[in-house]
Length: 299
Image (cartoon, rainbow, N blue to C red; front, side, top):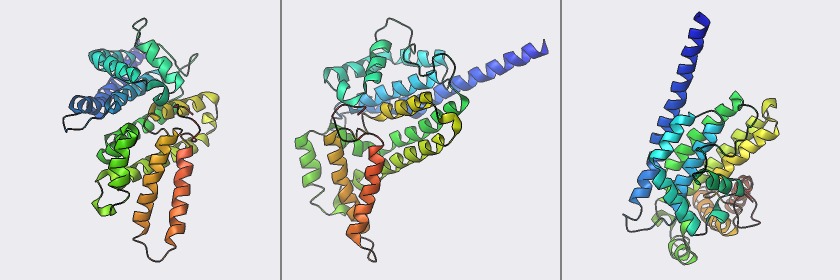
């Protein structure tokens, strides 16, 4: 009897932990995205599909978290059902704009099609670990990545920077960046210009270093952990789509200006050589997310 009571208390504690994680995610990520979605266009500008894609990304984090055992399945279902009209509207907007194939990799499109079909319970599709639960170190890895990704997603400068790269038409990009920024003094540029670029670079460096360290662990040297790493990247690839030639050209163009602006403050070095070395380091980081070979996500 005492052993059974201990098991019940442990189960209740585990349930409370998994439920509390969902509540935290609602406040720390989903609530922020929903506020952006509701407010988009109120500043006189349009975010295109950006806020909708952010909401779909939030769903994918929840989906992966359920499958690795980080989130409570029931609490996650209740959260999604509460905001289901927003998720469906976001999916329809991205689908009708014909952006799913170029922004979300094939495995993610399959998840959307299955989960939003209404033919099965939520979070029933595409688990990575099928015959067993995910190892504890994977749960820890998911938490570390989620926390840093949430912080990155809330950043005002990185948000403005990525929105400009992802959403702007060629005409708008030329007007907003090529004419206003690349030909102007950096200190007169928009606030997101330098800060946003370097926030993205810092995030790319963090993910590279994290997964490089993780792969040194013998437990992580498996195909399933490789699938987990790939899913974490695919979830975010719509906004870090370095396999998209247009995206990479825009990112690299701002990178050259940002690097020269910083290096210009250093007088005792070969400035151009320093710029070249920095850009090479950034190129290595971006190649981790996809070489510029095709337009579709997941390249």
